[in-house]
Image 1 (cartoon, rainbow, N blue to C red):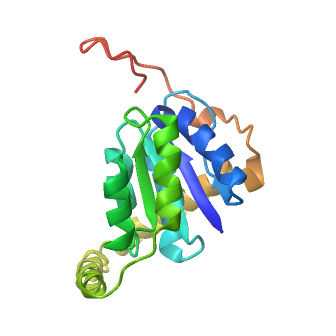
Image 2: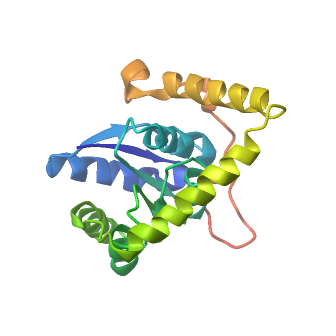
Length: 204
């Protein structure tokens, strides 16, 4: 199985740990960045994995940001994506059994490395329960079809096409297939800002 893997700077350290872990259990991670701890915008990287899963080009994906909230919001903007934020084992199991999640989201500043590995393993091993849950997912799919159809009006189409083109261009730029894991492109370099007010010291 191939799994898309992406993060922002808040999830970089955990992403690197999970990339190695996935290889150790014979899962091929498709690393879509970020490739350093410099501050980046999580939507740019979350969209890369979510788009591949949405199209059916990847079966599953894993996204990591500081809390996991931002990546969850981004991924669930894509049709056919069922991204679940699971920072504990119970939520993880339910996300598979009840929701058939195809993207796992983890908070890199919330979950320790060993627990994150347990979460990933459980997520990979837990099957969808079907039954009444399948009916509920069907209702979500109906809402998806209805609402995406409303959004994709003729007046909106050019804007969506342009956005899709930009996402594809970014994918080509930062994909390991074209740039390698040592990707360094100044286009994505941003200034570092440290939160002082709450004494968190996080780079944002």
